[in-house]
Image (cartoon, rainbow, N blue to C red; front, top):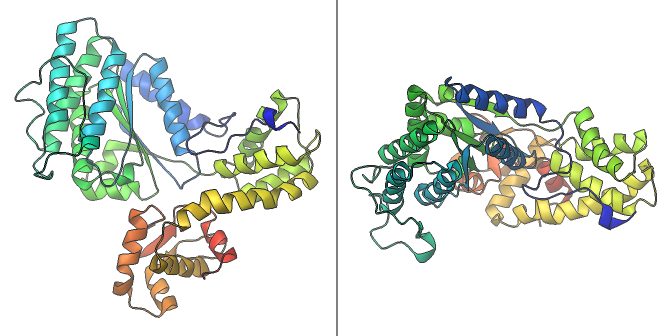
Length: 400
């Protein structure tokens, strides 16, 4: 069929043509916004799940919902090698501008605090001047304030900055939402600062929330920072789509193009994609391209599947595998052998036995894989892939 009319859109963080299976999460966020609008306390949100389940897409959709209610919003993507000071400054600057506060004097006061926060060189930072790419040019005409959010202690500074931003939002009957993607990569001191800020804002009943998204071990990262973190956030696990939602993700966009699927084709696509949103889009896109006409048949899916799998092997799986060192690849292949095609979590001690090594000698490879976002600690002594079907990929691509 005409590839120009192909409605499917596999891509990192790219919104699918039909956001199926996420109605509960969207409704829950609407309740949060509504409660805060009425002055009721609410917890910040954390979305967790494997890669390819649509966390970033959902995060963007939640942000759109907040913008639709006139909230100030900002979004950042955490990096393990970067402090949150600069990205939070940029994101909050955008959020404050979106509030459109009528009193310029009040706005300038908070912008002065924001500028002081942004320009403060923390005690933990390198004594050398920041590299050009790490400097933030705030574009704020007011002078930086003194004595507020400029101590150099990230926890103190973030609490003061977000409290002031929330006060500005309260003045206009709105709220501020800070969205953090890849939240598991936030540095430990910054995680403590986020938790402390959320704790303080919750006690104040301030209209500011943090909405984070990250891998399944994110709750453990937060808990390791502050013991009370499990009470600060509402955790929403984002999983693969059930069968009705996966069918809807395929059928709704196709029907808008006056195309449909035979039931057997939907059976085959669900078996191939296993309900993972990224895979649903990837298999749907290739199947559309190879199909000659509507309705799309199981034979079309059978013809498309090898093409889709080859594309995933290069772009989705291979690009991640290529980032691993030989020692890390050896570790992952052992995980795949033990966990099987389903990619089940495996014991770190079993991996060591499989490789004939002492567990301590494998710690560097395991820790590096965790930092690279390829595996996560499912629970104490357990390790699992962050990418669905990665075990299956490794089993079909033996180590060289």
